[in-house]
Image 1 (tube, rainbow, N blue to C red):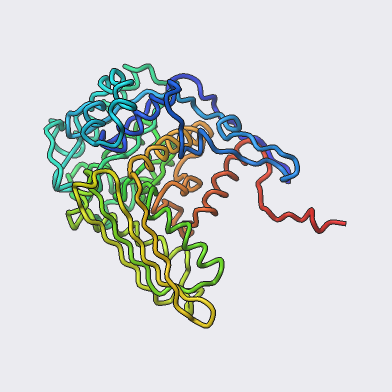
Image 2 (image 1 turned 180 degrees about the vertical axis):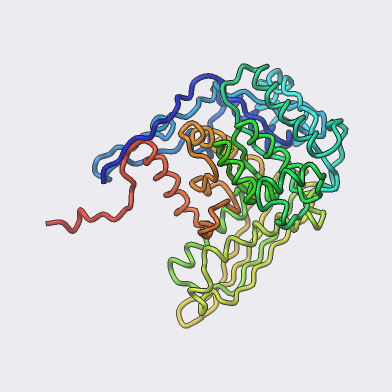
Length: 440
């Protein structure tokens, strides 16, 4: 099949990374990048920095690193900024969160971290009830707040001489909001903003401000943000890339590996019980039932889409799926995820799988932030506006076109991502058909 390399603007100049929320994930991400570009650590977990991509047949041996294959921005081009209702700078946030070792991974870059002071946030405790902060915008009304965010974006770009920007949400989970009339189209959304409609949460104001400024927006939380028709319309009108939602970092990552295994081998599923112990700010926020409901929705949707019970009712037509998150302060950022999976095999005989994942939440999330920033910037420079479904690999609840169902299988997601990179660079997509073994 004949392929053509897509015209991509060069990754020249400085790339500003504006982060909503300067907590555990953001401070771990920033510190990691600072350490890596000084040669003090390795970018473990980052596909953009360590991943490879096969080109052509397996026998040809063409397997370059992704960072050498596509024109990604380099780590030395990144400039960081943030908003947060808590006034702690990145150094203070990193110390409080307790993710990184102070002597090894914080003090060597203390100066760089202290220089990142969060801008006052658009914050409303009605949407995140368990956080308090005084570092908030004085502007009242959603329209004034959105305009204040737009001012911040422009000012940051000028002050730091950035050529391009990406905004990424790394803040807390907001309370659950159902899509409604305010989200149906852009004119309705703007009217809702002007009317201070409660169905427009702060995350949506950040996304609106970003897209109006021509800046890509990534939603790393399960909030209702860009996954409404109004935001998709705005993204297409402004020619901007959007993606989300909810970083796929720990327990759900395992589900998107194990569930495809069950389906591939036609093993039945009776039930899947998941519980989490988490002690960081995210865990505290999710103690609120309305915030947990938002998170629960993204964590529960994975199995149904992978297993397709409508196609396999005898295997997956009536399985029980339960998710729990428990705030336990002594655990801090070291999350523990327990899964009990009741399956069935030949002749319906029962079996069990038990998984105990003792992970570090922000350590798993930080490389996702890096990859999403670099890949989204690539998409923007390649003119890929709107939903970036090829980045579904990184999300619990991948945003997708309304005409298709979301893809959750991790390995299909990986294939889609790498085939998109091949397509961008004019290379043939890989199907793994392997017909060369059967040719005369």
